[in-house]
Amino acid sequence: MNNNIELCIFDLDGVIVDTAKYHFLAWKKLAKEFGYELTKKQNEKLKGVSRVESLKLILQWAGVHKTEEEQIELARIKNDNYVQLIQTLKPEDIFPGVKNFIFDLKKNGIKCSIGSASKNTKLILRKLKILDLFDYIVDGNMTKYSKPHPEVFLKSSEVLGIKPQNTIVFEDAAKGIEAALAGGMFAIGVGNTEDLPTAHYVISGFTDFSLSRLKETK
Ligand code: BG6
Ligand code: MG
Image (tube, rainbow, N blue to C red; front, side):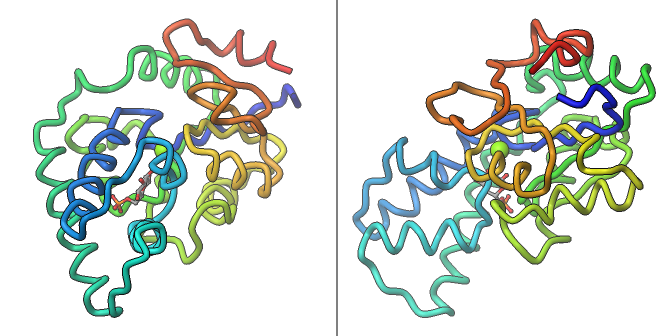
């Protein structure tokens, strides 16, 4: 890894907070309504994928046809369910170690941003009371392309004036790792190597992670 780290970009769902489980619950409930049982393995493929594209994939797996209008309505129902599930989110729900790690980075002059496909990003960050922690936030309302396209990460590095090769991305989704690699960034998977085989490095979480550990990463 290039040791000149200037920017760390964090995915939101599944990296900062465990909202990935609520996305799964909401999609599972929706799929059930048209008689389809969504599995955990399939859900891995939805991580990092936009709302509309996730729905299209589920419909494809289920072999169900819906008009564009019906799809808009289904995406709305899923989001309503999801937003209801995340109402109780609170600062204590932030994954252990994440905040201290970000403080450590900032103390050392490293910029931090969010790169998420979620249109609910700001709502979630507000509930977690960390909206002001980041130098920049890119969410699903600001991008044209979904991960694995690198747009969501490149936007941060462009706005903050930092080269992709001096940028590290933290991601729990295989599609997000692909996006970071496509953008020429160092990709750290948050999860396990089985799900994230192409990441440069994988951590299970942030509890035992620090800037000095990051610098030792190869
Ligand atoms: C990503 C999640 O962060 O955001 C996906 O991993 C989700 O599961 C996507 O579909 C879009 O989120 P939202 O909140 O705009 O529906
Ligand atoms: Mg994620």
